[in-house]
Image 1 (spheres, rainbow, N blue to C red):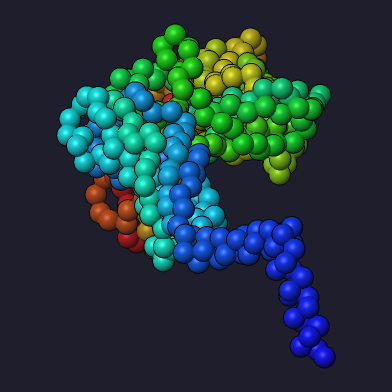
Image 2: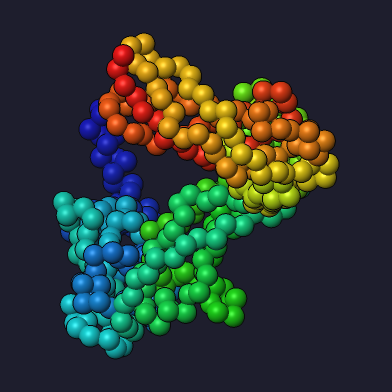
Length: 424
């Protein structure tokens, strides 16, 4: 029964012309698809926008002291025709193939037609690279140069809060090495690192700056054909707090009992404007600018002292030095002869004999009235015997000139006497 049904159905398809034509078409499509897939799966395809890799270092022409000067743009791209199994090449992208220039013919400066080589990135894939279009690049090579430039930092766009001051901008690194054609490198006259920030600053801030190259006419030079070991720098904008600092002097070799307040002097300037960094303490005490030796002090003399500030402080006034002038008004000087010469601090077991009976020409300075009232016995020369050498013979030793009756006069200069030290 089933056999008759199948025979009847099949007989109907074979005896009906329209049905027979439809069946033939279906069979033809099936057979063609089978053949196309199993017999003719090899095809070709073009891949566009494959980037040509231009080496920045290690190229053979660089070892010859040459560099690209013309024909180099930001990016070269080519189109590549490949052939192979349809399923394999259908998966390929512009990153599947590497294209590089062949610089082997470059031996000296000049213009060359550089062949482009293309290779598969995955050698296990079964396909063939047919063509590269364009197949070459026209490039010009010239003498290479390398120079190191200091970087000038620049930051714009910000303001500084009241009571603060911006200090010179600091960049890191401070220099950049530029490599490229000599013609281009020799044009470079200035290298800057430029940045921009907004707002009012009351503390230091750091941003990233970009490098710019300029020629002698301040025209910017494109870095496209140059190589630099630095692409950007850190720009520090130091913000310091404003303040002030007072200065004064101190005295040395002050005679015993002498009151230095009788010395009238002025400092110019006595106060300067300063700025100090974050973390540095605000100035509170008077800073000593220098020391004056009373033994060599001459009234009416002007002394100069260099201003030195602690680390983290800046002299906003740019003073550099401070002048100290002593006022001679109401003061006088007088040459006297000293006959009272004494030895103090004599070591036990020794005897000191002063061989000099007087010291003449001792210059006594002080207020006018006191100096006028002095008599020879008012002045004493004292020897510190503790520093004497305990050996026989005559020694020349320094003395200290004192006026015990007054705290407002002093002796200017240095004086010596001869003594003899003997063991008892």
